[in-house]
Image 1: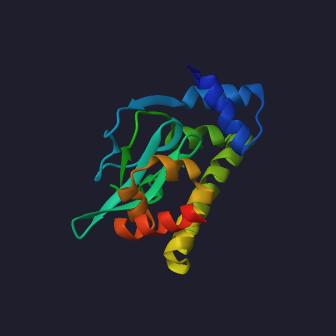
Image 2: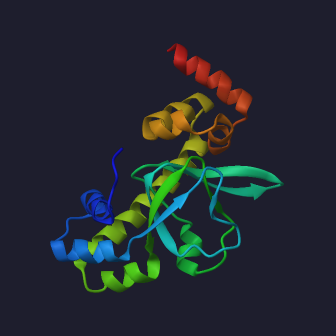
Length: 196
């Protein structure tokens, strides 16, 4: 089994979001905080303040909230993806969202306060921070457009194209919630798409 060091994770983040000198990698590595969660653990409960950007090294996370006593899945992410409750992170207010591990999950957190402190003096870390935020905003927009403009079948097709691992690994009830359809509709749509 591959074991990743904090240095490996710093390199992965740098490759994905920015280029960095050895000194900048050292700084990025120094602020990363490793955390492990079991399946079903709450990574961020409702009412807590989100203080970090979460990078998934291994596993599957789901972001959800309650509406009329029903769980609504807002986001799901796997290895190499970022999760955060952006409003809580920037306003430093309690979140209405919750983050749950759907599998045993290993994450590396980038505490916002430390990230902003080091970004003040490191242009490439500023770029990394900005690109992470851009990616988060784009993903939110893609999801909003998906449920606003696409048919049920196209929503599923697009999700499979954008996030195949999530589509293959997440429980169907959460995929249905994320795509704003009933589990029955999702089953029908999946059988149609699989026949294509």
